[in-house]
Amino acid sequence: MSKKDNKNTQKKESEKGVNIIIIVSVAAFIIIAGYMIIRSSDKDNSHLRAVNKTEQTAGTKLIETRPLLPPDMWSGKAAEAYRLAAEIPQVVDAQYCYCDCSKNPKFMHKTLLTCYTGDHGANCDICQNEVFTSYDLYKKGYSIPDIKKEVDKEFSKHGGHMG
Image 1 (cartoon, rainbow, N blue to C red):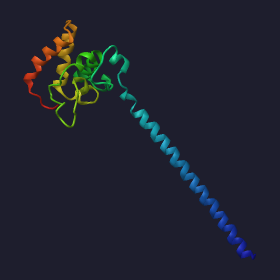
Image 2 (image 1 turned 90 degrees about the vertical axis):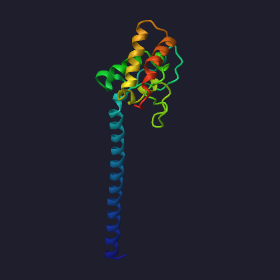
Image 3 (image 1 turned 120 degrees about the horizontal axis):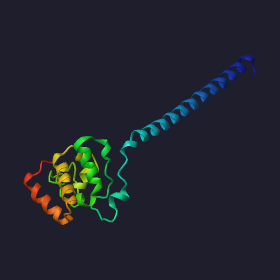
Image 4 (image 1 turned 180 degrees about the vertical axis):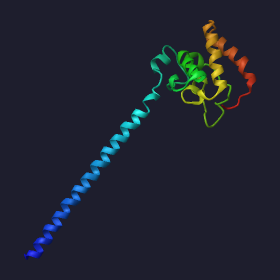
């Protein structure tokens, strides 16, 4: 083998080594970047913790079984509505939602409680007012069937607006 062939062989081996280092470095970078993205997205969603499902469904058989969003995601009237829905889920779950979100293909809600598993309840006055009325009646000692009767009487005249 001539000196020229020997230099070419060494040069090719050297280039191979550099290529391997580049490939390994890029792969390591991709893995680390992916890991960091996954970790940061977990942190970003940490405020979306759900209300404790055991508390929500204790001693009841709810139609809506998904967890509610926490009240601290909102302020004012919306936050209060989410807090009350979480406090009396069995009462709220027994109510029809008179904004008619159950008829809207975008929502297809099962009960008034469903409005509080997402952000719909934060943006709908009918949903919020139904929860406030239900809570007031509950605090006065009304039974769930009587609360349902009173809420139906009060809100059925609204005609729905698909909040």
